[in-house]
Length: 574
Image 1 (cartoon, rainbow, N blue to C red):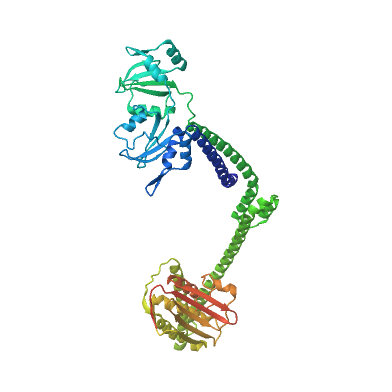
Image 2 (spheres, one colour):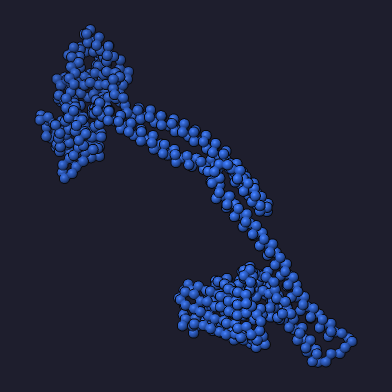
């Protein structure tokens, strides 16, 4: 599998080389064909250059322009050019004989072209998408043979009879003679005519003369005006110039064969490349399999890298091996974190068990004392015992409520009802309520803000719960006389609420665990207020309200916990 993937990588690289190779071949073919085209143009301009000449004609400021190379070819062949419009008027001419008309009327041009009007010139006519007709002419090569045959022939029924001299020439040339009437139907012939037509349209005659290479015979035409008959002499088309389409076909075969050979070389090279590069990848696969089984050693990968003696190949794998080494380190770290988390979970469970066991022991103990038949307790003692039982029961109730709330938040099972509220007033009231706890614990609470009011959409119930948990956390975990400052800072972009103290602070490694419910709970002997879940609940509630909570703490300096709410809509504040 790895060999195949690496082979595809090599194929990708070799494709680039192949494209360059093909471009070079294409350039060679282009210049070869261009040279051949020029040669064909020079040898038989009417056959191969006429269409190119037509498309090269341009018009600028009512004047027609033709490329000089085509005019040179026309002059070398002693030919001429004419451009006429759809009404037969001559728009442009080059070396045109004086006896030609300035306007062709009716079927005059067609008659010249097909030879119906005797002329010392051979005419070629071309028309496509341009608003003119191109006429090219050059002097005829006098061929008296067809006229002599017409003069010597005798018609008997639908056959032609010739004297022995003409008959010998016809057989030597394997020639065929046909005579057609003014409707194009054959009235007499000489020779085998299996591959020839028995009737001709004007279009047939034009195409036979204009494009002789498309037919088995080359046609020569003589029109007998006196009898309104057309004599056709057919000679085998053996001496015709080579058709460039055949040349293109041969070249195409050569190119296709070359491409197949090149593809074979590329595939062979890819197989060799895959075999050579596959060994270190197999070692790498074994290393990854070790990671999958929980073995995070990287010695095998380092050895596999060293065993690869090819420096270039080793360089290719450097980044990949480094990534796998990083993955191994990350997996190892995650495993250690999971193990640490499991230890903390066990410690937390032990703490929760202790937190429940302690008040239960107190309740049970005072209950046994009160139910003891050997002693009668007075009213004040019973009242004190009942007060302790109520306090321990309240703590247990709060602990259970916090546990329930923690898992309700985790499962998103609590409703969030946001309404426009003044956050300044909410925080102020919460601080005032918390001050009731401050005198007995020796804490000093203060409130700061940069706004008189700040209205945003917030769930007041859960915001108050967050603030209570943060303030209580600062009170419980700091010594007496610790200063605690609660503040609100707002602007157009965000609202910040912070709880800051100058107490004992925290170790850096303890900060990431502050909001996890697996962090060690508080002993009930230390304070009757803490359940060990307050910060976890606060962190989860802030996220549900769409905020961000950040802790900055330093040992023996203090702790600052900041809650930030980004303001997406325009708010009212002052």
